[in-house]
Image (cartoon, rainbow, N blue to C red):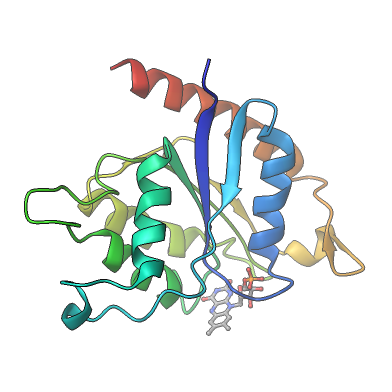
Length: 187
Ligand SMILES: Cc1cc2nc3c(=O)[nH]c(=O)nc-3n(C[C@H](O)[C@H](O)[C@H](O)COP(=O)(O)O)c2cc1C
């Protein structure tokens, strides 16, 4: 049977990003149950309607990867109590139809959201903003298990994220998302 395809979208291009490290920890946990890959969208240009008629290859490649996935898993930092502009730019591209009679590739995708921050909010406010945007774009979001990790420095050792108290919550989110995908695919 074909494995579930999950595409991770990390809202930070920082080399040592905690959110990227969280995505990699998720990959380690879930890879025996699903194909989990991390989307590289670092070449994506700023959205410009003038580019829409003949989009750059990076847009076509990203649309294809999103289209082939069963589900998306967002790992978002919190910037100024919202999600970063990188994510908004990517989602603006994905919100647009690839052709006159085609639906946007992201419509109806299933989505999970996690985030990690050194601060106290754990990205909760950013996640609320992201949920509002994803709802508007007709994604189906797993809301009952969203993971928000505050004060991440307590789980960092030599610059590396070594999940301790957050590990059971990440495992629970993995399990819940796999069940959510399975249930939604049966509908
Ligand atoms: C422009 C900017 C705004 C930020 N705003 C917030 C914020 O509102 N809440 C918060 O908890 N952390 C905030 N931070 C700190 C980030 O959570 C921190 O830099 C984090 O490491 C970014 O995620 P990353 O490690 O995945 O790159 C902000 C950082 C930047 C650069």
